[in-house]
Image (cartoon, rainbow, N blue to C red; front, side, top):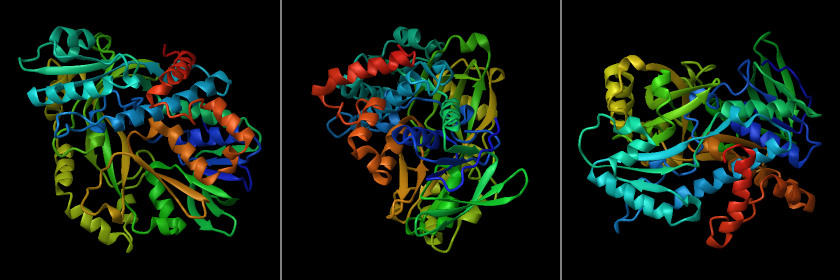
Length: 499
């Protein structure tokens, strides 16, 4: 759907229509209904890049099955699950806001954007079985993960996900399972929230419009926008700009001239999926199954076999497989994006990081030269009897990993999502990767706390926020708040149709 509504001199301009911008705009408008908000999107429809259903795994990341969030055992044999607990809490608050949006009539038809699906972790080999057993023990001790199951029994694992065990050679295997996992279509959710925003007074959305420049002023930003249909340039001005443009964020940060962008670079990694639409196979797998990442693979390339509901149809996705690219955006990117992002202030950083990440470069070359037979070998680690004729390869989204001077020798592909904000708190930009979309409400609420503190410091503001996210001011990780957590979690899941 094409949007072409322009609000002159709004309070806030959001660049990009993905899940971050959509949730930030919705929260801000609910906290202060008089705010004037303008959204600009470069594609002709909304949420067509990283948030689009086919461009991501659709996992409601809650730390249940993602082994990359708890990557190894400690010297005492235990697994530190603090990161998984933190992510679970952040996704819980995100779900609470989505349930509020549904209950208050902002959005409708939850099955179009969120559905229940089992989350499994699956490993093979003695060392990995021991690791998963220790991970399960750590998770099961916390009230967030009550009911998580662990098994090394093939019949049990086969009852959870039959594709994992049929035709599998002998050898130790193990899996964990929780039934409260979710499959999320972040693109549909974004379009629903922005559709609501477009109906609010003082709010506008202009798709097929590219923000081409940002100029700092004494009170905010002058923004230059190009109408891609006509080529016409127009100007707008706002007190605050949020750059949630995915891979397009780096170029705009560099154009902004803020000190925080100096030395900042970006490294794009493309993605590909194997897709199966055979109804007989699809009907036999209702789970998201995550394994351990392959050697030298970045954490965003941890293989998983996913049941998905996309375009009203159930399908299976396996991957992701990485692909070499110089584009920063899947649909609206250019092969000149990467070379165009190299500046005198970040050249040294990029060269240093490149030299210390030759393993990743080799991995990307290897991934890009794989044959279908090579990809099927990886799939058969999960699904031993898979036939190549049942699967096709499709391109997915592009993730641009931020590279900073402070990265040193640490590598360039990191877990997590980061928001860069200038000292005047007039511009924020989103950078990073998993578990970003799943914890979007937590992330954009931090933006609000930092850049719009007045909206949540008043009695009225606190009450509005409490209505939208009942647990936002309670540390629901603590055992003494387990009952409080369960009450509000159960309510949100019931509203969303997950229970």
